[in-house]
Image (cartoon, rainbow over all chains, first blue to last red):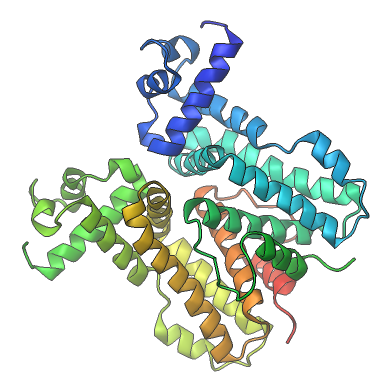
Length: 196
Length: 196
């Protein structure tokens, strides 16, 4: 295995693009080489196989879609009320919209995991980890609502992000006078999170 | 175009299986013929092209995943309170779990629609139609909560079904003492729907 970390990173990012654009079945070493504009055969020097590549994509997506610690820290200076929960949800939505390939690749990983037991365990760990992190973060920050609040909010955000990224505009005007995603995010938080 | 409706239906159902198992890129006429156990070349006599096949899959999924009118009618005899909303959500979850291929194929359609503008318009119309139907149904039945309640509930159910069908078990034990999906469905409805 070659150990140039910069090139490895570029190959994994290229693989994310391929996954988002072509779907799981389109993800071949050759497609990654083409996307990364490197000689054919390069990817096979960096990954032991397709499963290894998928695991590295999972790890990379985790980094790419993670919140910016500086943003979180700044937000946490505000009072710990429902409008702070809304600010966190806006940050999450903004990250999803800014890295559409990353989120679409994440959905492909998910579908691929539903078909391949060997991928499922590691991918489930990442997804579960995100939810548990959210629950713990909410508790530590002293935000209004309990673990159930966070879990229901997490599910509604998953649904919203799925709709917005795969069928942009599908929710526009469903609630008269409520713009999407901003106004809708407000309604989601008001519906799920207690006033505190 | 051949016009044997029974065979057409069998081919579309075979295509749903292929889509669920192989993903959008695996959906070829040849794969559909093999899945349906008919001679190679049969599917090409029934569909003008891949887009035509995808449109017919969309229509078929709509039928397959629709609620049973007799079940809806029976449920509507109960008082129009929050526990009736829960009964409807249980019915929806049950349908998703009983037709896992149908739901996974639906997610593939969605991802495919995000890549193909010509498919997007017709698929968006189906998805939007489902949400609008839900809002109208809730109003007509006099169930507790307004249009916002239904919209937020719809998004949370989308998230829950996505988690359960692609990563079964990922939510188990997240809320101690709450079983998945039954107990979690209860918490979702209690969190989102007013007591009424």
